[in-house]
Structures are given as structure tokens and as C-alpha cells.
Amino acid sequence: MSNSSQPAPAAKPRSPAKRVAIWSAAGIGILALGCFTALLAIPFLKARSAVRAVAIGRISPERAVEEFGGPEAAAKRMALYLPRARKAENRAQAAAILGCCASHGAATLATALSDDDDRVRRSAAEALARVGPPGVEAVGALAKATEDPAPDVCRAAADALGRIGPEAREAVGALAAAAGAGRQDVRIAAAEALGRIGRDAAPAVPVLSRTLRGSTGDLRIAAAVALCRIGVGGREVLAPLVEALSNGDWQTRMEAAETLGKIGPSAGPAAPALEKAARDDNISEVRDAAAQALPRIRGR
Image (tube, rainbow, N blue to C red; front, side, top):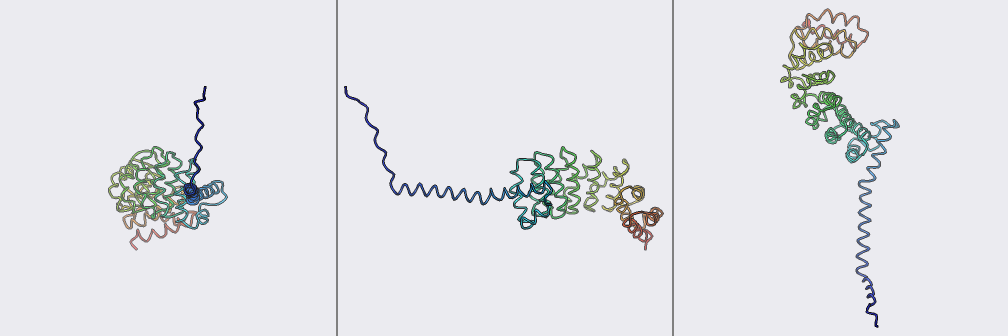
């Protein structure tokens, strides 16, 4: 019986043109991989190395920015690295570096305020506080962060808005809500921020006035200072400011003296306390501030 199976036909050899096409495609793929490595992988690895160096204290964030070639270049590297870093502590450290990049890092930090980890969100808010007025494009994200479930993030966001100053006026509503209720340190930070925004924070005056009447200690002082900076003085704010001249924190005492000077003659009843501070305070900056305030409240 004959065998019905037939031998498989021999594969046709590839034509020279096909071989060239295959090798060309492979070359293009290798080139593309090389470009990816140069444009993404290598900068990512360098950014990670800088973040780790800062984390262990080998270099400062400022030095890391210098090594990248300045704020703009460093911000680009951190913008590449931060969203892709797996560890929250590394993302938080990258945010700290962005805080040294002025306005160049503001957009990336605004995005980081929505990170899943509260450590990263807090680091981003603290970095924006360091950026100050150049971080104005993050005001909307910071206003939203004043309602963060983590109180430390709320406090840091309020502080950042205050550091941005008058340009953060669109956040007045959010800051007024934060100043009116919640944890005390968040309320203090929000009141201070409203004061730094200044006259544009006038819509928050009712909340600050209620806070002034219904609180004690540092929160009461913060509300009084904020009202003065907004332009709402009057005798009701004098008592907290006079109390603040005896506060344990010398910067609070100095700020109280400066604020009383800005109130002017209406702050006349505070003169004895200012005289004592100008004479007896153990910090020269406080003595100087009190001495400069006295002529102003005496109309000179």
C-alpha cells in the first residue's frame, strides 16, 4: 500500500528586500527604545537618585535644584518623577524639592494636593507655602485642600494661602469656613491667612468677629490681628493684642506690637503695655516693635 502522506513543501527563502525590511524595522524599534530611555528612563532615574539623596540628608533640596541646573530644569525632572514614584515618602520628598523651584513647580504641586497619601498632600501644601506668591496658580487646589480629611493638610494649605497673600483672594470663602470651625491649629492658620490676604478678605469679617468673641488664647489673638489687617480695628480687638504682648512666643509679641502701631491713635489704651514691652521684653525685635508703635498710637 502506498504512503499517502506527502512531504511538506520547503519554505521559500526570504527575498533580499524582505530581509532588509525586517532588519530596518528592528533597527527602528531599537532606536525608539533608545530614545525612550534617553528621554524618560534616564531622567527618571536621575530624579530618583536626587530624591533619595535628599531623603538621607546627603544633600539639601536647594542643592538638588542646583545640581539639576536650576529651578526650571529641576521642576521638569520632578514633574516627570513625582506622579510615577511608587513610594509615598519619595513623592513627598519630590514635593519638597519642588518647593525650591519657585513658580516652575506650582502646577505639579497643585496636582500633588490630590495624591492618595496625606503625607504627600501635606508636603505639597508645605512646599507651596515656601513658594509663596509665585504659587498663585495653585490657589484653587489649596482652597479645596482646606477641606481635606487630614487636619495637617488643611493647616498646611491655609498657611500656604496666607503666604501667597492678596493674590489668594479667591480662597477667602474656604478660609472663612476653616477659621469658623474645626481643629484649633487649622482655625488659627486660616485666620492668619485671612489677615495676610488683607482688605480683600472683608467677607470673612463676621466669622473673625465671632471667633474673637468666642475664643481664647492664640486663636483669639489670630482673629484680632486678622481683623486689624483687613482694616476692621476698634476697641474690641485691643484686649487680645494687649494680651499677646505677654505671649510666650516672641514673634507673637512682636506681631502684636506692630499691629497696635498700625491701628494708630485708636490703640491709645494699649500704651502702658507697649511701654512695658519696649522697656522690659528680653527680645530686641519685640522692644523695637513696641518702641516704634508708641509714637503712632500717640499721633506722632
